[in-house]
Length: 573
Image 1 (cartoon, rainbow, N blue to C red):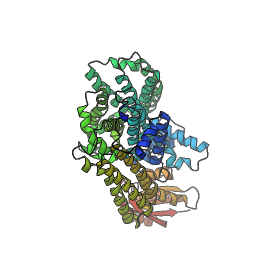
Image 2 (image 1 turned 135 degrees about the horizontal axis):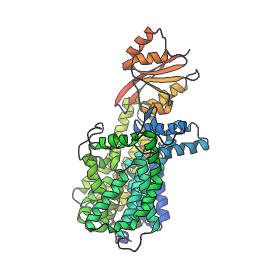
Image 3 (image 1 turned 120 degrees about the horizontal axis):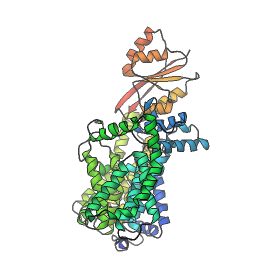
Image 4 (image 1 turned 90 degrees about the vertical axis):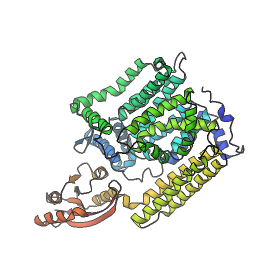
C-alpha cells in the first residue's frame, strides 16, 4: 500500500463534518463496492444524455460504423472496407466490438439496429465507463480510496471523455486499455523487490496490451514502453519488469493479436501494413496529414477545455509534481505522462483526444496534491485561475444559445436553463475554492460537469436541427413512395449519409454524372447542393429529364463549417 494511504484523514479543508462533500467521500471510502457504484452512477449521468439523439458525427464516427455494418452485410470479418474502399488505417478490434453490439441488438429485436448509430456507440460507452473504474483501480496503487475516487471522478466528469463516450470510434476503448495496462505497470514498479506480482495483475496488464493493440495499434505499447524505459533509467535496471512475466505476455499477445494480423496480411497482400504504417502512422509523424496540423503547445492549451473541470486543479498541482518527483509514485506518474506528451506535441498531426490516455495520471497526481494540502487559494494566482470553473459552462451557454438563434432562429430554452444551473454550480465551486474548502470545491465542480452534460447533450443538442443534415436527408429517402429507390448525392459527400442511406449510395462527382444517374431508369433520387445545381439542370435538360424537386434541406455542415442548401430530385419510371 502506498505511503499516502492514510493521508485522506488528515485534511478536511476546514469544512464542517456534515458537509455533503465530506459525507460523500466518507461514504465511498468505506468499501470499493461503494466507490465503484458511485463512479458508475456518475458515468451514466455524464455519458448517457443525448447518447441516442446525437446524429452520426462526421467524418470519423460514421466511417467506423459503416465499415462495421459492411462486415455484417458481407460476412467478412477480416477485411475492413468503406463502400468499395479498403479502410486499412486501424486494426480490427473496434469493428468487431461494434459488429457484436449490432448483432446483439438484432437478436433482441432493436428496430433498425444497423442504421442506429447509438448501437455502434455501445463499445465506446462501455469503454468510457471502464476507463473511469480502471482509473480508480490504477490510482489505488498510488494512494487510498478517497484519492482514487477523486481521480476517477475527475476522469468521469472530463469533457473529453464525455465526448468520446458518445462517438463510435476507438478512443474510449483505447483509453480503458491504456489505463488498465498502466495500472498493472504501476503495481510492478511500486512493488519492485516483492517476491511475486499477483497473477491477476499480470493478466490485466497483458490482456489490456493485447486488446489495445487490436483496437489502435502501437499506441498502448508507446505509453507503457516509454514509461518503462524512463523508470528503468531511473532505477539503472530493468529487472523490475520481469515481475510482469514477459514470457506469458508473449503467449497472450500471440494468441489475441497474431491471428487477425496474419489473416489481413494474407488477404490484403500486405496492403494493410503499408497503408496503416506508411500512410496513417508515418503520415502523422511527417507532413502527409496536414488537415489536423497544429503547432507544439496545442495539447497544453486544449487541456484546459478538454480536461475541465479538473484542468484547473491539475494546473495548480503541477508544481507539487515537480517538487515531489523523487517520490516513486510521482516519478511513475511523470513517466506515464511526460515522454508520450512530448511525442504527441512533436508530431505535426494533432487532435485533442490523442492525449486522453495520459489524463488519468494527471488526475491521480492532482488528487494526491489535494490530499496533502498543496492545492488551495494560497497558491499564486489560484483564485483567479479558478474562474475557469464557471467560465466553461457560461461560455457554452452563451455559445450554444447564439448557435441556436443563428442557425435555427430559436433559443434552446430548456437547455439554456440547465446550462445556467451548471454555471451556478461551477461558480459555487469557485467560491468554495476561494474560501479554502478545496475538497468541497472538487465535488461541486464534478457536479457542475454532470449538470453540464445533461444541458449540452441531453437538451440543447437534440434541438439544433440545422446540424442534423444527414438524418434529415435519410428521412427524405425513406419517405419516397416508389419501391427500391436508388440514391445518389452531388456535393454533399459526408460518410454519415452513406451510413444512414445505405452502402449502395452513389457519390457523384459532377452535375452531368448526377443527371446520368437519374437517367439510368427505375426509381432514383439524387441530392444536389445548390452550388452545383446549374450544371445538373443543364445536363438534365439535355437528356430531356424532368426530375421532380420534392423538397429542399437546409442546414449547417459542421465538417465543412458552412451553410448548405440541398435539393432532392426524384425520377420514378
